[in-house]
Length: 236
Image (cartoon, rainbow, N blue to C red; front, side, top):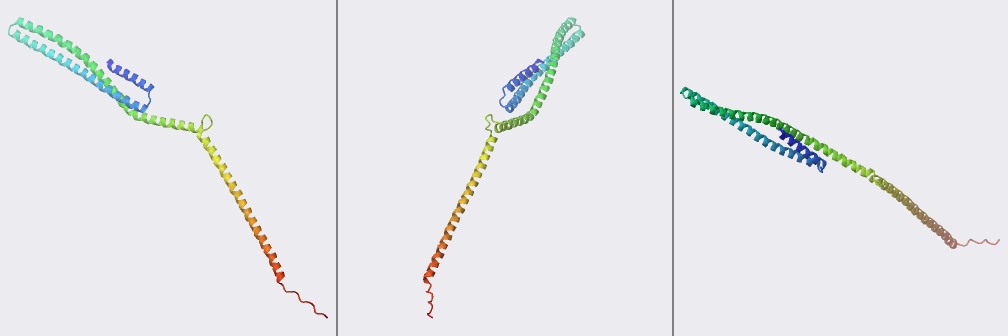
């Protein structure tokens, strides 16, 4: 009866040790289930051996009980034939077989109780392994969620709160401010460039206007030179 308890003690010690130094909990769960099923196979082998021993004891007890009954039949036959001494010898052999049969029967009953306890322990171990197998899927899902949450939390911590103040978000904000500044400077440069162009156009128009004025003056001078002399007044 102590065998299943020793199995469970060793299994729990192994599980606790693996949990303490687990690097990949999902793989650990699969490995533990494999080990539990391996232990179950070994337990079944041990129970099978115990059952075989119990059956052997039963057969031996029944065999010697049958021999005792046979010697009793011989004693009765000897009595009918008037051979009391032969009957007495047969009864002595019957008593020996009865004692052996009773010894085997006592061992058989004890082994039978042990086998029943082993069967119950084995059934309990099977139920626990089945439950562990069902929980494995849920534990794996919870593990995946926990790892994802931890990864997200670590990523957010790295993005939001670097110890030197140079987080990714603050760096992004500074870059955005720089882009805004550069855009403003570009707009200002474009505005100044447009003013300079307008000033040049105005200067050229002024030059063109002066050229027209000069042409007008020159035209008037030519017209004055080409005009005929005014008539003189006749003497009275």
